[in-house]
Image (cartoon, rainbow, N blue to C red; front, side, top):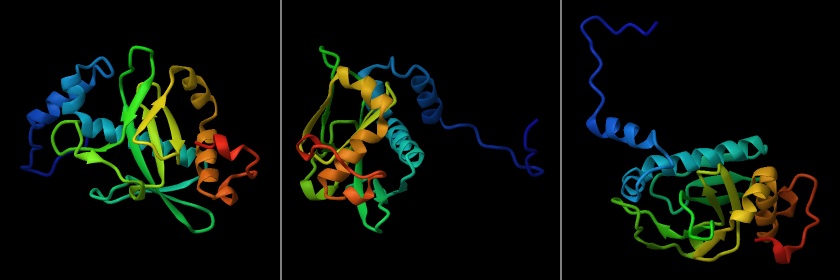
Length: 188
């Protein structure tokens, strides 16, 4: 059963771009690099939604930022403070099985980026390996981040651990449920 249309009103056909995207994305992650770049926007949105889902499941309050901000999400802490999150995703591994994130702003066309981010652009990076459905949060500022294949199982098993480490690195140990007893030198 479907929703009846208004009399005399028919739905427009799906645009060609939308049909092409659906066909290409149906094969994810087994897509060509060209298709990954062509469909970077919906894949980036999928990564942002995965971050939203994880944070909500962890009891956090997260809100999308406006499209042209230098960050993707705002994380509201119990104290009322907010942190800016930047979401980056990788779909492919290097030869050793690691996922390498190069922090560049996305471009309007393609996936090469417009230039590097600056430290003041966001507080926490949410590095998403979309093919594995895992996220590593970090407040360790580096333009190149790596998630090693050996880390995937622990990131999946304990999704809160990297978020708490990032909060501790930023001095927000009061926002960590149960408190923080970790080593700040390791809080990346």
